[in-house]
Image: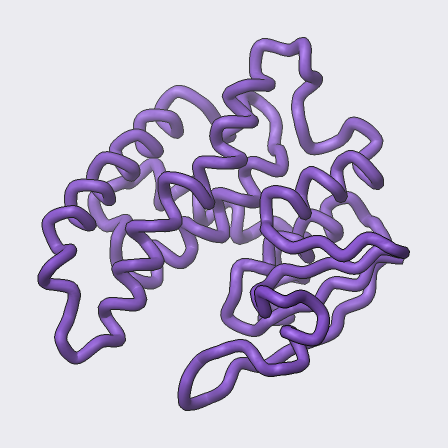
Length: 201
């Protein structure tokens, strides 16, 4: 059985969501951020030297990084579910969005969130962040104009990866001008498996 080391207020929610969608058995070990520093506790560092979530332990496998964890779970427990077949027309769109969430999108969203906690603000980075956010969200909005899901016509793990990051963006009021993205996020966050996973946050 997979053990998910879950950190509150983190993107490890997506791993719990994936396991819920697959109806795969798992157990959760909860780690709580320091209230003052918002950093992960030493208990998480004892599991993985990066002290970041998500971390999973499955037998002799200990794995960090959301994308890698998602791929491992799909390969091990997915039974060809929640991703297109590699020879399908949707596979590489799925793969792009699976990695876009933590690649292109995460940097400006998370940087903006962290800088909002700084009294000095993000002035040296303001121009870069604004440009990148507009570029990324315009691209997302366009995709959701043409497709129901990021990976095509079917819900997939790419939607899990993207929804968690879009949820953070929404909490920072970044989606006000993107109606398709807002509607998509509402639909995804109403899924029963998402609601079960979010209850751990």
